[in-house]
Image (cartoon, rainbow, N blue to C red; front, side):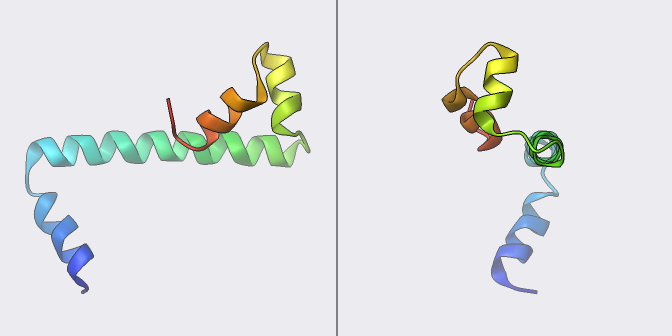
Length: 67
């Protein structure tokens, strides 16, 4: 086990870290699903933005996990 994995494993013993980790994992899974659906449907970020009434840069930020 490398140092990073050991650090994560040790940190996950702390309830606050575990809660933050799980929230982060959920957010990343949702992002992965959004990107997969967009690509599956052959849509660009611009096309999704137009349909959602926003800009391409907003879609890019969402897909990059930035709020």
